[in-house]
Image (tube, rainbow, N blue to C red; front, side, top):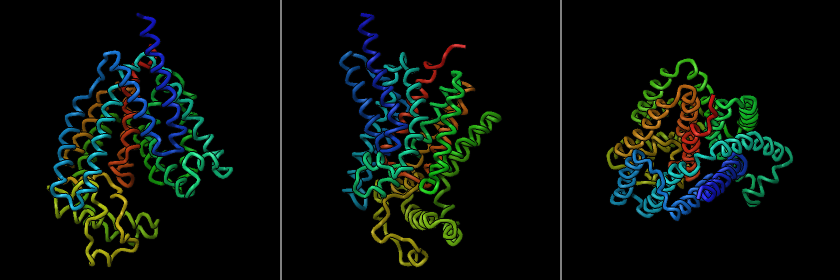
Amino acid sequence: MTAVRSSSRNWRTLLAAIVFACLPTVGIYGGGSYAGLMIGLAAVILIADLFAKRQPMIDWTLAALAIPFLVLLWLGLAWSIVPQRTLAGDLQMTGLFIAGIVILGIRQSLFDGSSLIFRAALVATIVGPIVLSLDIAIGHPLLSMVTGHKNSEENYYTKLSRGLAQMAILIWPILAYAWLNGRRRLAMAAVLVFTAFMLWQVAINISGTLSFLFGAAIFGLSLILPRFVLIAATAVVSIVAIATPFVIQLTARPLMALADQIKPSARHRLEIWDYLTARALERPFSGWGWQTAQFVPVTAEEKSHYKYFWENGIPHPHDFWIQLWLETGVFGLLLGLAFTLIVLRRIGRQPQDVRPFGLAAFATAFALSLPSFNLSTDSWWCALAATGLLFALLPSARQPR
């Protein structure tokens, strides 16, 4: 019986080690590969556990937040301006939330082999950016092969940018494992390799690079003033979540001329946020319906101030808090804020030597939530779930001192 259980755990550990070795390598190349890898891993282990009559560990606190949020999204079908788009988005978010709960729930099957998982991820974190650098230097044939030869330059930008941004979050629990287990040279090597690559590719991934550097700054500050950082983060997140539409309405247009001198995409963001926040404040309680940002009306007066406005609509709001305000109203916003504050509270309850890494990961993800991504991006949620899973496995991977 013991041998059977050991063998069962070994194949789970080996599978998870392979997946987490792929995230800093194939995941960087493919961008959205995080979703397929993590959901596939969770599905295989969940099915095996169910056959073995082992129930997954359900995070009931997060489930208690996810359920009312999903109910709110589905109720939004009644007043959505594009019900078909909202229906598709509701189905997607329902699947993503279930997947996230399942990913976090497989941790009990990986406790015994967590050290192998971290070692594989650590080596891949060093090797991945090096291989990618060599690939780019010779014309990125590997990247083109992974992303597809059609429109390879466009795929190069979008996939690489997304993969690097998600890796900027995932790297923190990997560094925590290396540093706390005495593998400090490997930790420093991972930091140097990844930072150098991010700085090299800053032109195509400025938000990801700045977010990672912001996370690094918060890490350093947390070593000195951990309690202050935790309190300040709680205050900043709360203010940003609640005050964003009001601040944007006061500042967006005066800043447009300045932003245009920095980077066209900066002004474009301000144009998007200007009219989206105006629409959000027109429907502060109900919102316009999930995934409808592309279809909200824009007035002629607003268009007269814009330089980069897209007549066919934007892909997404480029800011999580604006998206919550616009598409779900204040109730969805408060649920999103509650989720964020619960994560912060859990970071605050981590051991003192782990807490700076958790705060760095949180700061990186929070910074990315402001100018990038869409709340229904599957790879984003899977990157967060993978990061949470590694932090949950960290205690079992720590070597006794």
